[in-house]
Length: 286
Image (cartoon, rainbow, N blue to C red; front, side, top):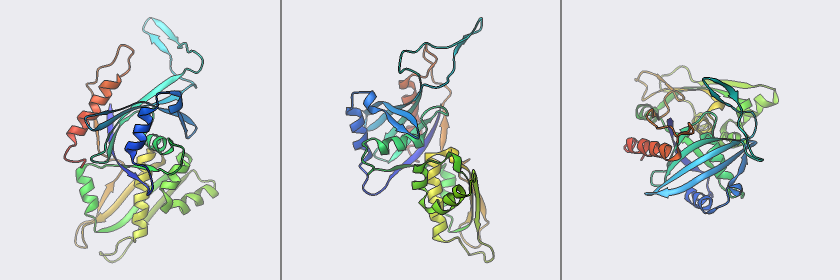
């Protein structure tokens, strides 16, 4: 089980995230918790408070093609489902209101972090709240990025086919480039913004706003950004370094979870792993 950390940010006027989670916790009907996000049905399967933390489990409801069960001496066969039943892909999450960080289990086929943010944003149906999960980087990269007094180059690649309308809202600083690509039938946009010449020259604030937007999209929808590199240095006499903001996201992997009899990782096992990750990152996530 792999875990990533994100900083929760909200646009002005959004409800406190704890209020949304409390609303979900008080909604007893599982059916009423379902929201359609990017044409996929998602649901907060479980939401509870423990020791000042919010522990959650989200499920992606899949009624299309799926796997079967197989034995070493028997052929693969399908599962039998009742009406409205299908496959459920689970993703656990932990939110710490005191730090503003959310830890999310990585499940490639399940509910991704960006979809969780969109689900929480859309839950009350008022379109007032918009939450963004910004990826946290390992301490060394975060420090080096913050120490960049001079930013010389930003290189990135967007996969437009994987971007949602929510991604476009979060990437307003990039909206012209995104629209230009779509209008011309492009699938991908590759951009390199750089300055040449004097050692003290740095990219303008608009470029840094674009970098912030890219980091927001990366947190919501990693598949939409296939490259994100920043070249910079502390001052004009320093050596320029290149930071890969995809490769150096803060993460931890657990290999000691106990499978249940149904060959799934039980919810409590996954929640315990999230708490362990939080405790291990106590000095980082603050």
